[in-house]
Length: 289
Length: 111
Image (cartoon, rainbow over all chains, first blue to last red; front, side, top):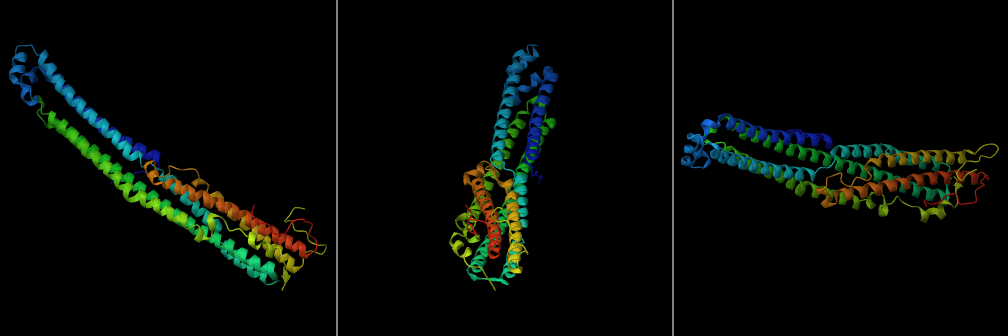
């Protein structure tokens, strides 16, 4: 499998290169055919009719009589038609490939950066629980009263929120890393498909070299090229559909679950716990033990 | 003197009051840590197409942004809450030491 970069800019270049390779292969094939025809027109014409579906009686006498212009035009017409059909098929293929990849053209590199930021955020919160517990013991040695009791409750709420956010960030970072990995895998699958298409196209184009061009047998490889293109694009589109149906929807559900768990993670109504109800007690009696 | 500034009496805070001030310093540090955590989340803000345009049909980018926005805002409030707790503890120490010059309650809620 071709390994895609997790950097969207680099991946775009990888895809462009693969597409360019196919385009060049197609162009080279037709250039070879054109050069061959031009170089050998004088002896191709009497022979070419059968392979092209043009009757030999029409072409042969004309060429043989030195009146090859009409036959050359006919040959050129068939050649141009083949070029057009392959070009159109490939243009559509490129559009389909870019659509399939563009739809899932996210930013796995940025996902990884954000996940690292979440981990960094967790690191800042990590020792809060220990410190809050330590402070409670530290103050409880000297202080009692409603104020101190309210402080314990508020401190515990803060602690629960910090711990809950730390867990949320861990889950979110995991989702981002999983999403990043899945997207790069998808990109690699797509890159592999396009590279494979490129190889198939080059093979189809290369088969031209071994054919008896004089008989117009190059028409068959052009049809092969079209069929190869259509099949290759179908694979690319299938990959996109599979990614979307199996992964994107699943990840969206996972983010829903995460957003739904804010309350149970110490953030009631998605907010840091308020201590309005405890203010009276906090501002009440603080007595020395 | 601002609300939350320690005002020790002439002979210094008593042991009990000093504990409140020391605890307040720790809460201020925790407030800074929570604020740093909020800052570390900044990379996740404002990226609706992080997962690609088609994936956005599922709303995944918006769901991630909602998470990022909500948690970052909560951490912002958390930093303020920790700081207000610190101020309240110091004011309580001032109260106990009869040096409180503040006209507002020792502890106040996040606005």
